[in-house]
Every structure is written in C-alpha cells, then in structure tokens.
Image (cartoon, rainbow, N blue to C red; front, side, top):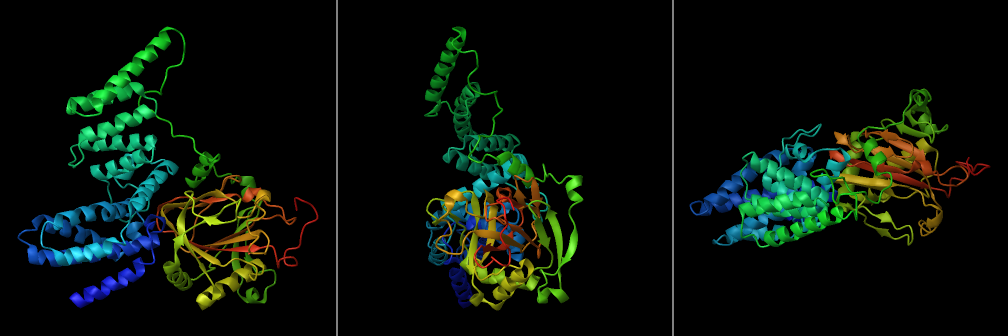
Amino acid sequence: MKLQGSMLLMAWFGVLSCVQAEFFTSIGHMTDLIYAEKDLVQSLKEYILVEEAKLSKIKSWANKMEALTSKSAADPEGYLAHPVNAYKLVKRLNTDWPALEDLVLQDSAAGFIANLSVQRQFFPTDEDEVGAAKALMRLQDTYRLDPDTISRGELPGTKYQAVLSVDDCFGMGRSAYNEGDYYHTVLWMEQVLKQLDAGEEATTAKSHVLDYLSYAVFQLGDLHRALELTRRLLSLDPSHERAGGNLRYFERLLEEEREKMLSNQTEAELGTQEGIYERPVDYLPEREVYESLCRGEGVKLTPRRQKRLFCRYHHGNGAPQLLIAPFKEEDEWDSPHIVRYYDVMSDEEIERIKEIAKPKLARATVRDPKTGVLTVASYRVSKSSWLEEDDDPVVARVNRRMQHITGLTVKTAELLQVANYGMGGQYEPHFDFSRNHERDAFKRLGTGNRVATFLNYMSDVEAGGATVFPDLGAAIWPKKGTAVFWYNLLRSGEGDYRTRHAACPVLVGCKWVSNKWFHERGQEFLRPCGSTEVD
C-alpha cells in the first residue's frame, strides 16, 4: 500500500514539476491538481487511522475532501468545466490545506506532514488564487452575471453543482480590493452581507466585511453610503481602530461638500447615485462590442448577408488527396471570407495531440509590437505549446491536411500551436498579422507576414469561448473536429484590418484549439498578388 502510494506520488511530481504556478491559465494543467488533492486525502486518511482519537477535527475535513475528490477525479475536465469548482480548487490548495498543515504540526504527524510539505511546492500560489478570482470576475462582466448567480453556481451547461460560501465570496471581494478594483469589491462584499443576513454560517465577521465595503464605496465616490456603512460598523464594533477616524473624515468631507453647494461653487453633487456604480472604462475601445458578441448579441448576420453564405464540398483547388475525399466547407462570413471545414481532425488525432502537447504547455505569450520579443499579457489567458513534425506522426499528418485544404505551403508556416484555455480563458481583440509599425515582428523568421490563419477546434465548449470579429459583428462558436480559415492579408500584401478577432472567455467547459499560421514566403504562386492595394 505504501509502495503504491510512493509510486503514485512520484508520478504526480513528474507531471507537476513541469508546471510553475499559473495553474489558472490552463484547465488541462488544473486536472493534475485534482489527482494531487486526491492523493493528499489518501495520505490524510492513513494518518487519521493512527491518531484518530486526537484528530477528530482533521478526520472530518478528510471525509469532506474525500467525497469531493472522488467526484472530481472521476471526470476532472468535466468537473473543472464549472468555473466555481476551478476557483474553489485553487483556493483550497493555496489557502485551506496550508492552514490545515499548521493544525497538524501541533501533533506528532510526521508522515502526513512530510507528504503535504513535499507536495506544497507544487501547489497553486497567491498569484493563482488572484488569477482565479479575476477569471470569475471576467466571466461576471462579460456574460453579465450577478454575484448571486455565480455564488449559487447557476451557469448554463454545467454537470456539477458548485456554490460559493460566505468565506469564498469574501475571498473574491478581498482579492478585488487588494488589486485596487473597488467596483468588484463592492459587488462581492454586498454578496457576503446578503448571505450572512440569510443566516449562512461563516468565519467571516460582518464587521470585517463592512470595513472593506465602506472604504470601497468611498473610493467609488459614494460618500453618503460610506458614512452610513461606517456607522453600521461602529455599532457592531465600537472600538474598531480605523472606523472612528474614517467616520470623522467622512463627516468633514460631507460638511465641506454642503458648504460648496450652499456657496454655489458647484452645482453638481459629488460622488455617484447611492448604491449604483458604473463599471470602470478600461483600455479596450471595443470592449462593449466584443463582450456583446461573446454573449451572442449584436451579430450582424443579416438575411441579405446570409443569402450569400453556402455549403459545398471542397477539393482543395484540385489537390489529388482531396479529389476522392473532399472536405465539407461552410461559409461563416462573406467579406472577408471566413470558412469552416468539418471533420478535419478525428477524436483519436485530437486526443493524441493533446497528450503530446500537455507536458509542454506554458503560459501563452504575445509578440511585443516594438521589440518583437514574446511576453505574457493579462489579455491572453491560456497555455500553449508548439509541436514539431518530429514529435509524432500525427503532427505531420495534420500539417499536410491543412496544406491540402488551403492550397498553401506549410514549409514557411509556423509550428503547430496547441492552446488550452484556463478559467475564464480568453484572448482579447488582436490582429494575427503585423501592422505597418510592427515591421520587425516576424523579422527573425525571415518568412514575411502571416498571410492566413487556420484554427482547429479540438473540443466543444458548453458555454462561451466563441471566436468573434468585433469590426464585422461576427461570432463563430467552437465545434469539435471543425476548423475555420481566413486570410489576414489582402492579395496586395496589405493587412486586412477587418480580421481583428478575439477568443471569448470560456464560461463553462474546457477549450482546446490548435492553429497554423501561414506566412507570405513560398505562397507567391499559390496565392498571387493583386494589382491594387485593396485586392
């Protein structure tokens, strides 16, 4: 039994040692945490058998975790497809298990502590917990979900029931507060109060919640409500260290405001309408359009445009390989022309590519437009890996298939990129090609600009995860085994700015894709240049 456990531990260490934090950016990697947590439960149960009389509290925790991990380990990806389950997994491993370690250290529990201490080096970090909380907030904003809906786990397409406790909601609000995000701090702290008022038991004190909430609404300009919340806080805890000073400060500000209004120095009331707060404007100009498309709203597929979309069999411009077995091709958009191909990859090929890619997954990067250097960015939340044809015959086979379908050569294309999206995984609006001021972006490759994109969907997604084109008003939904293709450059070589696109946050599900970026060099006779700038 112990030998088996040791072998299992070594196996998981081998998998987890490839991953350095940022678990939240890949559901595929988070499934490893399910098994790590399950192993911890088993180790804990063995310890309980020895110290059962003294460790009744720990035994209760273990039984709770055993029930949870038995369910999650049976279908890790399905279980983690619910973002609340994914958030709680990260939170448990980063916060709750270490707290349990402190309790166990009070006793002679060398075996269990050795197991937990060794595994802790592979646990999620504070960065992961903050990232997981931000992911839930991203879903909240994009899909217009209120905290109560998320707290009750009422998301479309979910197989598992998952709820956020008072303490979980408080963790969400505190994460937002620590990031200076007072808008979400208010939303989640109000949810904490709602659940406390409903009688839910929690370790979080109401006075603690009011402390965060009063300061957050003050930062949002709601001085009257900040004063009212501070008075509520002092009624619960008259000796609160900060509340007394805050109360006097808020009262002084209100008096100054009244004096200004009376002297007609200002006609507008300071602050905001009490209890109603606007989501702050951010750096993305098309945020509203982008998120609307992610929700399936604002799609500009008019009846007139729809009449120009057709289905057909595609023979790959006369490619011999496709004459006998053509691919089913469907128009997704007319101009620029975006097409979907069906049955591009089999389930077996998809599973093999995921198997090869998973150990190589690393935080997805973007190319700095000024330096051409790859770097991580908050607007791209996923992990990716690059597969060469030497990695496995299936990679070469898929590459050849994309070449036959497109009629373009893969000799100058980039390697096959495989991406797995994490909690609320997304890639905000971007161009695949380099623009005029980014001429050096692909200089190192020496193959010119990215002429076309071939995107394989390697999983279905229960909710969210669409590929959207904000300038077009187009939304394309993932379908396992299909692929979409479009040209990024006009025939003149100029970039087609209409192809700015995004990968919407995954609301429920585990999204896997792979893509091939074709470059200009080698395509001269396969896709001849146009005679004008707009060809």
